Length: 191
Image (cartoon, rainbow, N blue to C red; front, side, top):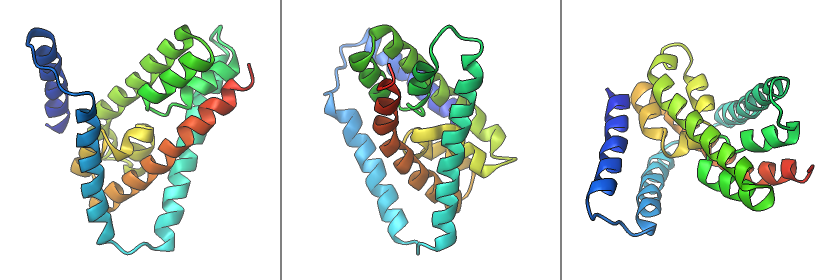
């Protein structure tokens, strides 16, 4: 049900933006995300941080990075793109706006467009797969979401898992988000 609600909201937003004169200020999306992150922070403040939780967060981040790069390296055997390009695109971890901009500025608009599409698809796959994967592995749901586990996918993850996984998702997403600009720039340095 949550997936249908999210997809319906996106479709409704597209129609509203396309066929009405509704124009939101550029800052409005960020403002809403900041409010969500603030509310998650309030929720986090009520939890005591334990070492086993920190270990689980770091392991989930490592699994996300290694899994993402493993997929990119396998793809490199079938793609005409260079390995560093595939790894730079994969380093977006679902954060399509930033990775696409960095890659467009430092490499090419074509690779930036590939990064945008690839990372949008990652987010869409995560939205669709969250209800299914959550039955088998809550940590997998967090990893597949990548950087979006702390914002866009936090709602679905919270809905289909539990409080502990939601906290893991937020911390995981925060760390992965911090890695995106560093790793994208690192792989683009190999041009």
